[in-house]
Length: 603
Image (cartoon, rainbow, N blue to C red; front, side):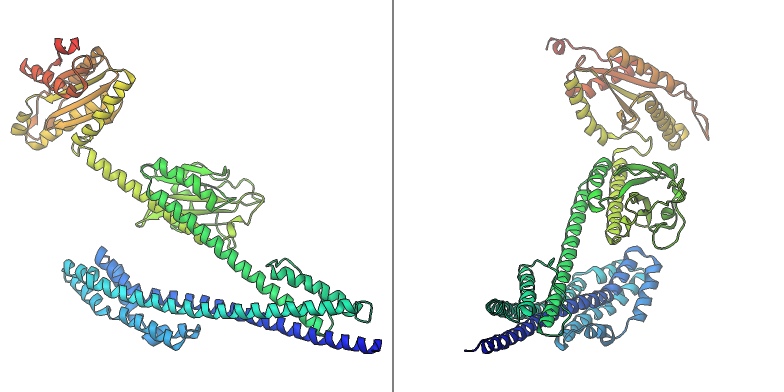
């Protein structure tokens, strides 16, 4: 066979294989485009459905908010939303425009109809609430039948989403299988082409075919191994090699886009998991110190590279005070007036150095006007009440660090604000439960909790623990002669005296009625007696008057007991009470120290 014939056959075979490989690569690229189109359609449907879900449940939420709070603002919002509500066909039209099938649209319409059936009950509940029948209104909106109807609507929406997911996943799987098939065929074809080119390497195709095919083959293999960093060579000629290079380039671009989307999805999932874990830890905090530890641990992970501080609002002084910080922020003061921050004044996030021109906050250092600091202030609010401020600043070498997604920062501020509100509410309830409302001293419940702690601490440190039992002499006379308001005045003034003579106001208690008690850790019997005499003298110096005139002298009788000197720890209160009874029996207005029993001393 002539050499020219062999060359022609090799050339013809090479052309055929090249055309085949280009065609398969184009088909693989088209299949990948279909896969991406299916994913994009699912994204559009998600957005359309999210808006529809908000429309479906908005009226129910408005009605419940009005019944819960009685705020007419929610009623106005409810009626406005009800009047603006369009027909079912109009509300689901954009879902069909996004690519939903007829069956899916019908399923979605059923879900919307189920939610719309609740409008009569909502209107009845609103009417009942306006009529004063709050129980009926709550029964209608929060009853089991209403919840079942809402659950059915939510279930139908979930089924609609499941159908969408199943259809889109089927399309993605089908496109992926087709792309994989064509890619495999293309690789086989390219391998045959490369083999043929090797046979005629020293012939006319050496520079025309061999060099481009080798390069493209390397790129294809790397792309097959998911190495999308491989850069396809550029061929300007309009032929099969050029088409193949273009198909490989498209395939690589699709792979890079898919990798980017997967990376963003994984990063978003990781960030939301971190926020969820922080929220769980915040919900488990018992004290403000626990909350500060959680914030200092999690916030730098959620906002890497950003320095910042957590500020709490001191309502008594109307000042914002630093609670904790991270990454050493240097441009915001540790304490400033609430009016110095635009975020607190407006109740909205404030970033003066962002894309929009704005006024910087007064608490931010502006000494270097040539290089403004990129800061972000997020107010911490809960139940329309301002609790503090979350402050961030970008480092000097990275001014665009605050330009990322703000949704995470908003979620962060919301979760921290709710946690602070819960802790403050818990502390308020605890103080209400453990404080006497008349005198402000600790009550009997607080005494039961602290007595065991003080006894255990005294035993551990080897210290004495003193107890003073105090009784207002002839207290019934103040109530009978001057009225109960005068008796309350006497108790309040005695409580103030007790709070003023102890280093820890939490160790002064109203024991019950006109009786008070004082715990004195670390004091000897002489020191406790001197403290008791000081209390008796101060109370005797009180000059109180009522509408009926001067109430006369106020005196107290005091019993003193020290453990372990006078009694074992579990009998401390009873021993002090016995000394008090002896002081009253001996004429009142005096201090009596408990007597040490021989039997206890022997032990």
